[in-house]
Length: 302
Image (cartoon, rainbow, N blue to C red):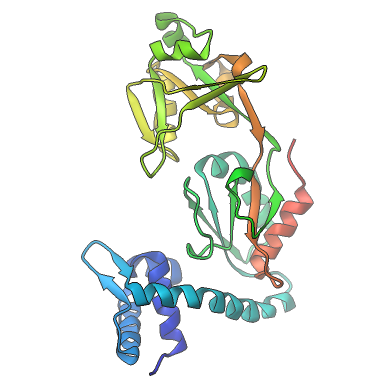
């Protein structure tokens, strides 16, 4: 039974990326060299590790078991090699972070530029996913999520605003034509621009006032997948298509300009801000340690 270390790394990269081209794009090797490495590994082990079709590449059962065992070992190897980074004047390498779309826009946006200016040899990859993911399986060093979505075995560090709000708003012309809702239940008679999770679930709009919580499954002419597609819903709201329910920071420029008007302000739901979370390793990769230290120095935003 023969298995070259580089071939194992190539297999793991393809399995984590979900394809040869994607692994080549993120890893710097050619798709053909990765394919040859996996074929060589499969021949040496005498088993098929990946099922390949024209549309997808997924691990076989034995391939998935191998990925499961390799991930912790790879982490230790990377940590050992990263010791060299501590002898450099400035840490270098890739930092891969998994975040929801609203966090990318409202939390990371003001952080990335000063961080990368301080550490010019670090390359940051931001993976935007609204669903919760297994960091190690997704090949990420850290993630940002809200407290109810954190894994218990992770270290969590406050990042960004410690209090956030969801705001409901519409264009003046929409409200002039359809009226202004006074109670969340009034939304059932309005045109609402909704969001949907990647898995297909459509979260209800939730409102709170004086301890009373109201959840509304509002109807509407537009449904978008949560994430960057919310820009489409926002554009629709600005054009008077309907009412939108979104993070206040996302809507703030349009609220300040008067392009959107807030409604149901007394019912705005407030919740705690997000956390940077990462595995509790004794030796963090240098790019991740630099980012953690940077976030700590910045302190929680107001």
